[in-house]
Length: 159
Image 1: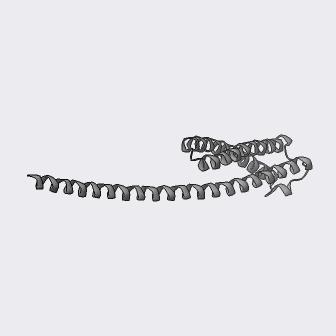
Image 2: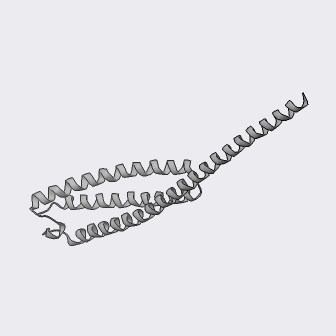
Image 3: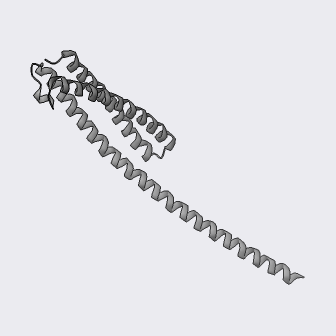
């Protein structure tokens, strides 16, 4: 029979992951605002916070896998559905947390893809502006050279 504390442990780990993903989702939405407002300093801060959350999520995932692998070995099973003599309400809660996590991950992925497109668009715009600026600088340099030559010839004529 499965230790009820182990099932509770799985549930608490999924709950912790769910909370972390809520925070990650909020930061992902803030990232989009930072990109649209071209606030790249804030974008860098958000990206750092997201990296920290990813580390925490990975830690929770490692603990979950370790505990679930122990349960699978002890009970000689391959999935939750094979568990017997377990409070079905706990299993339902675990499945609900898992569904919620999957939905959040899907939403995060969609927003991140939009953010990547926005960043790429801003990058391309910046490249065009730099190219235009270089072209303008060359034109100014060429005109300055022409103007200098013209002024020299005027001075030469007065002598």
